[in-house]
Length: 479
RNA sequence: GGCGGCGUAGCCAAGUGGCUAAGGCGACGGUCUGCAAAACCGUUAUUCGGCGGUUCAAUUCCGCCCGCCGCCUCCA
Image (tube, rainbow, N blue to C red; front, side, top):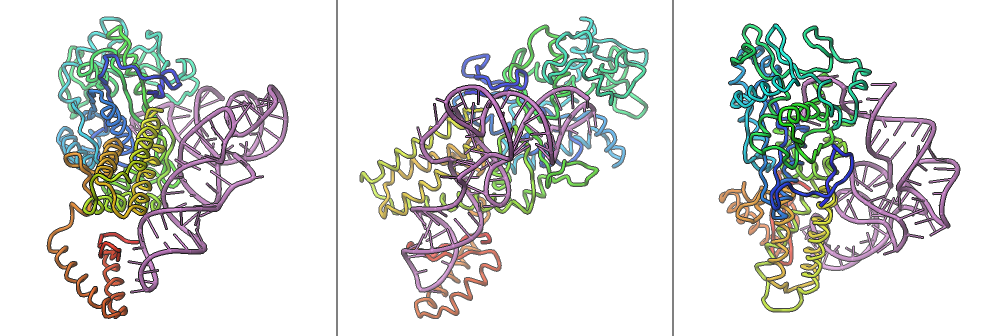
């Protein structure tokens, strides 16, 4: 299994620190707003990576933090006249609503800054002791970048390169412009915790170092996040962590590419931030997830609402295949040999899927294999009037296994549950049976004007009628 | 200015130093159907931004050029 390591800038074979186990940490959102499409991509990417490790039989410990103490939260809370901690708690809840909708598994631990002040302070103290950090008369603590020899190894630049950028604000309290805050002294009215350096709050970067080390230990396997975190956030995490422990920090660094909206950067000033909940409402979670995995995770991905049709149709194709499979199980037979070729093809698909995911989590290719599986199922059912039950069950298991990694459809007890199946109620089903019965009578009498009218009008309200040799089918959707 | 990425069919998007350049959407033809829909079968890039170079062989490696984008500041 190969994965691209930002630290070495090449693909490397994945070797876990402890056989059979994967310890991974992903930087989670700052809880000051509803999550947007960019957050969603990071969530879905790391969720998929995690799911693939599980598929491969690893025991995975996955930690994802919430930043609930932060300048943005304080500002937002001030605007809304709320308590910052309360505001953050609210958006943590909202986060779970959206992440659950996207079928993102909950992390094993979701640590929060506000609950880890002792660990953070302890770590800052160690950095001061070991000479990597200094305090100021105002009660701030800064990390001294020039005192950490490896600084810049993740982002591939030297401290002097960075100065050339010269977009760094000059802060009189710092000894060097590159130094960054570990502890910020509190201004009046800001949330503050007591510390050896005076009342204040942690700087942004230190939380992830303290919390990842607490839950995963030194030298854990994978640390990840959005590409924008490479510098300065992750660079600073490495400096702090390795400065404090004297041990290598995470061994593999994974970063996902950015989302653009209609070829433009997603930003507040352009006003094109797409919230996950709006997109889920517009397209459904399966389509969104399929879309997010349709490009390699390191590439930039452009979201254009006008181009989502392909994703919608693609997901429909998968659903149709799944429905055809379920229907065929009802008429399947035992102990024929007609499924042998089919089963052989299923095995090839499994290999192709694993090869794709083994190669730096190539979800685009893996998803193509899922489409091939759908084609294979459809084709087998088409050419086989009496399909073999065992073979169909194997196909269903394989479909669920692929889906278990990609997470496009929700599953319960290892079985895929389609949205409309979950959302349809008995009354609707009964009414439709009635209407379809009337339409069938009209069709028998060759009164096609009536039968077509029923079909057209149902379509207009979002019910699609399909006449098949196996009887009449209906489903929700628009075609 | 520094660092990095991208440019593959109408659109989205994998991929490889040489065997038929995946897959989805779209389009076209056929099967099925009362007609549709869905599904199936088939067609749809002699070619991978441009120009050079390396090589027996390059879309894939190297150089230059053109175009697009990201990071360097809070940001997934």
